[in-house]
Length: 281
Length: 359
Image 1 (tube, rainbow over the protein chains, first blue to last red):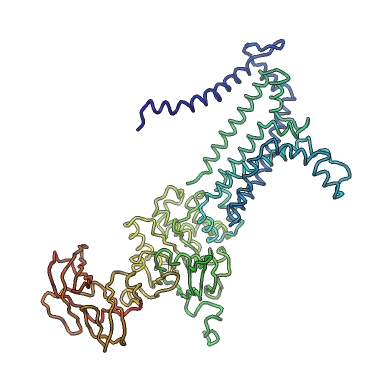
Image 2 (image 1 turned 45 degrees about the vertical axis):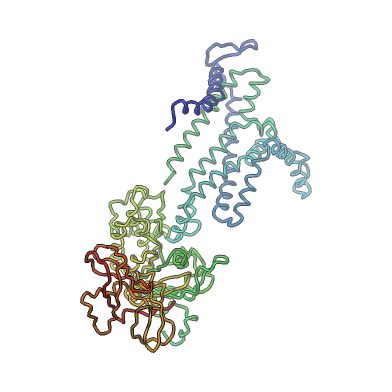
């Protein structure tokens, strides 16, 4: 159909893009993780010290585990919010469907930073939530743990990533042929049985895709812990950021990044396998 | 039934002798009136077909009985149970869907077992009944397959087994054969009919294919724009269509528009004695009711006319002639295949075969 020259010209921009902005930086990061810093200068000396350091220093391991716990909590919370939302919208919203869908998507258009600062205003000791609690006489002085805590990070990330979880689940639910639901009812299954025996199993690919979004995006997030996390809410990306910045230890930062990358890629690989297993024509 | 139920609108069970009674049912979607005051009975073991064009409301009527839609007016009774107020999962009817609607995440066996599982049937009973249902539709060897690995006809059989395993008194079938190719369709038609006779449950069958309806049904209910046009056995509805629409929808016909005066009907060049009262009249005359009269001799009570063969369409065992019988009037005649014809010929038909029909 098309000539060779045409195919080459057309495929050049994406290849260049992937090469310059993806493969090259990753290769550099990978190389850096095996180098060292001596007397404040980077030395190109191949060694495994950064990885040894990473796994022997309890601080890094602890932050890594906390990060996974926070990402896990965000995933769970946004699934618990996103799935029922998607289910309601797809099966029961009727004429309100279009409007509700838009309302759910609109927050995605608002800057991440703005939403972060909004949470600061809500959760702070003289913030909206504390003022409200005191007005109701539920508390008599500001509750401190609301802001600058892992709780705040989970709350903010859940708020931000719930639409990302909602969308693939909604798409999966919309693709379930409605005659299947009718067939289930016809065969004697009520709403609950129809949900657990037909709708939930057929929406698993969407559920997995949503969960992967929430977990992977949370895992690499550094703005939420920076804005509302405080010391107890520090996540692994903050460590990487400080190693590349103030601490000037690029090799160690690169080693941590490689670890995160490996975790992320294995996770994507795993969920892709699972999604395939649960996909039906 | 006693005289207390003489007014059917007050009866709290289906009409005497009927398994299902649809009583004055109407359905409206917004401003669109899809069904208008439908009353229809189905007897136990009967094969009743809802026949109509797309948009005639036949599928809506089936969905009302299944419970997927709520009637705007009227009632549906099955024996002494009022159906239209029950959700679909509490109705003792089962449906075979147009596109089969097999659960893609379940194997054939689990699909068939679904209805029994959700009703918490004991496992050993499920196994027996699923085997029996699969045997009925000759699909035992595919019990372990996935629906996506089956052909259309095989999926159709599984869908049947999945419905029949619940032993409904009434099976609803929504154009179940329309997705199959012509040969398979004919084969499935005869299997379906044989199966229905064997198990003896009532079938409410929806189709737009009049040949299919004729081949399968005990009775045909012809729907037109949401109203019942005629309900009768295939032979009755073909031989004595009540309306011009029925006559044209079921088989081919010649509609003769004319006038009756003094017990003589006149339609163009055709004139014959009738018993109808004076006034404008419409008659249906099937093409095969007219025969070529080679010797020009008509029997008593036959009407003879002369016409030129204008077109001849060969159809294997028979051929269809388009005959001009003068002053622009054209009549279709079906005769046994006999080779090319041309020029003017004599044709005859029995006056009894010209059936008076309403508009």
